[in-house]
Length: 306
Image 1 (cartoon, one colour):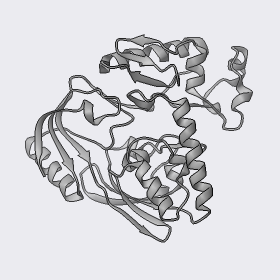
Image 2 (cartoon, rainbow, N blue to C red):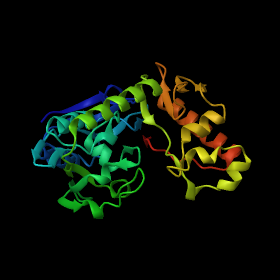
Image 3 (tube, rainbow, N blue to C red):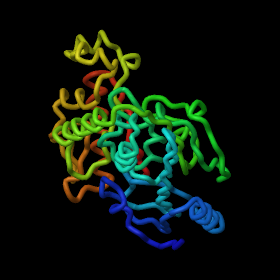
């Protein structure tokens, strides 16, 4: 394993934003990860780990420590059980699962990034998420010791898991999928991909910036009085952040090289030369506008490394 110095991180993120890592390595095995951690400990370096670089904004100043990019590509199928490395691309996992006659990951259609990041953030759509198919997680604990955890211990909730609470590093995940009508599943994937392509921007971004708002976290009657069409969202009991941002007239709002997408208001896009500071200022402005207009405190879904 090679440890490099002063590597610009922007090309490794879907936002295409981010300064240099003082040290950088590509870990292709659990042994590589452990070797990298030993290196960091010997040099008393901070450690930052990421996978596909989606749902992530890295500061323009970069990271003064060791950055480990996980490239753990294990993928094993046994009946309806799948063992998958944290670095496997989620889209690739979905396609391979379908090729092996397994369904249950259709909700992952179009979600960027890797399996490790998807489990960490309990990524999902259409009322389903990674926590629904996860059985077991192999990870390094806060002392970088190898551990195993069942899904019931992972505190899965909306866009949340224990891996957002603690400094645990996901290495490998065991998933339990289903054996059912593959043609139905493939058609559903095609439909959802087409929908995402028509409704979401292709520009560099980190995905949705904010979590949607659960009904129990909002003053529903007050929002009705402010013109929010609550009845539209009764099925999922969540108010889309994009709806509020668009209703507040913020589509197209631009600060520096960062812009609220005209196509999907919960995306901030990099128009070409955006800096992390531009994104942070625009994010703060959106939150202030939604708070002032609707009394709702938006919560970021994207991880800001600043």
